[in-house]
Length: 79
Image (cartoon, rainbow, N blue to C red; front, side, top):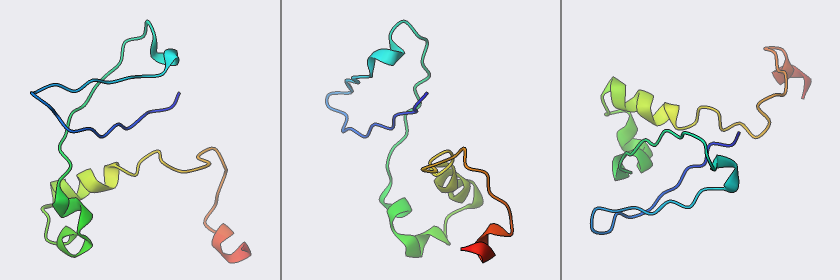
């Protein structure tokens, strides 16, 4: 199942989410975090505390275009 990522501005303390029909009658987990400009600036990433750097890296987890393709450490040399 796809994990949608939605970015919206909060207006009057509220956010309206429209999800696909595949989520109907299912329990979902919603995590709220702010988008900080410091994550966008590559020069400042090295100055972040370790916990924040890990948080930045976690954003990329599971985002591979073809995550089911098998790879190995020698594949780099066979391109």
